[in-house]
Length: 469
Ligand code: TRP
Image 1 (cartoon, rainbow, N blue to C red):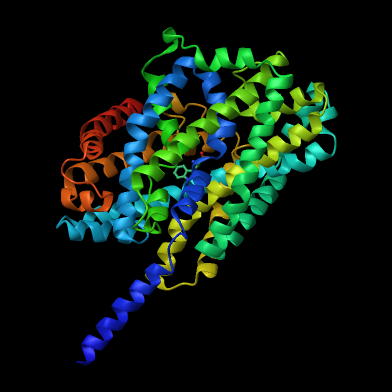
Image 2: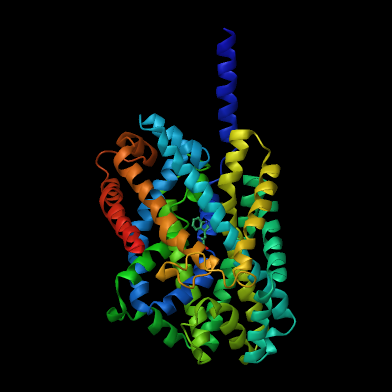
């Protein structure tokens, strides 16, 4: 008798906990997921990676990868998350248990927490740059000549102080919002920030049309030169599409845990990836049209945004305002992405150890800030530290280069591979059908499960092995 009352109490409180832990609608999930997907990878990284990998042919592979690999995996990740209803560790354990599989699958959860925090540690340092450039633009950076702009960039990275400061400010923004919780924190933020972000992007695109060389930008992004394609470029395109859509390491699994049952996973997953892709292309067009109109080099690497753009803006009317908009855009995009990198660990601490959200967020945020020092130092104090210099490929890789490689080329493909195998080969088919609301006659389901079973693991295995050898 007494035990059944307790049982009911726990079952109910668990249920209530779950009910209070939902996105208020499917649209809110979509905003948060797009917020996570659209980030530095779209606005800062995509343009220079396209530049470094030969333009159109890379873009084509990137688009194919988005549809054939990234969407199927995102569907899987969200479905698993919603079914498990918790942080990645708990979710994978519950699912393994439900399908009678080894508890070792729970280790995917550890990979997830480790990877999301590792990404956040360097992601927030670069995001800090976007913040640092806002006052720089306001105080006349756009009036400088080439030397002046290079001097400013060098100044930011020369010593650890400025970067530690801005990286800290960025982490405070991120943490303060995560501490407020799902509905009052993330939702209120994306409800306001995402429209601002899209508006800014449209203004910049129009500006590119009016003042930039849109024709050259279009040719550059959409004329494939297949002679530029090689194994390496394909691997890069697939890895980048993962990173850009936030797929593979349980960030979306965590967001999926909050997804109401009534919402269709097909719709939100496809919507997220399509919008993410569109933003990359629009940002690429806006940036390249300005770069080309000013006769600047498309393949100038990570400095493309921080060196080339201020320079371009120094030459055109209204430059300061537009330049300012660019860095605000970059900051907003990065902020809504950072939420999804902090959330999994905060949820885990909250659920597993009953740490309050606020305490968990500030504690983890502080640790990530400290961990970010490794990235900061790799630009100055540790510039000449090459941890893996014995391996020819990493002969002069900095710590940031190694972290980036570890994440994009190893951890993300490994996480995606594990997800594909787990979903495609291990989880009970009936569970998947139930979560996706797909009957046995569903063609979409049949297509999806085949991609997840065959194409995705094979492509990822190739990616994984190809990167190691
Ligand atoms: N997708 C984000 C960007 O494009 C980065 C990001 C957020 C991410 N959450 C992630 C990458 C989870 C991989 C996994 O900038």
